[in-house]
Length: 112
Image (cartoon, rainbow, N blue to C red; front, side, top):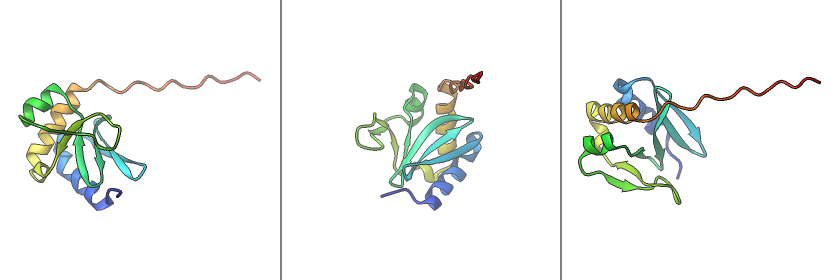
């Protein structure tokens, strides 16, 4: 089952105070970005946040689950995303701990 666009928009709105929140559809599901960093996946209308030590401290006792078969475990956020301040805080600390995205190399122009 693919994630509903309305659910994704709701989550993005809930996270808005964390920074610049964007998302991109991939294979019927979504990658969520905060300030250009992938911080979460939304699969089957469920939120999965990338695991970080700061995120674990913030959550306390997180539920770990893979967002899709064969994936590494992420923090599965079952209903706490209803609390706008809490979810924005989790996304903020997660983004702060993740490395900046790698710069894309520009293709070399051929001389032909």
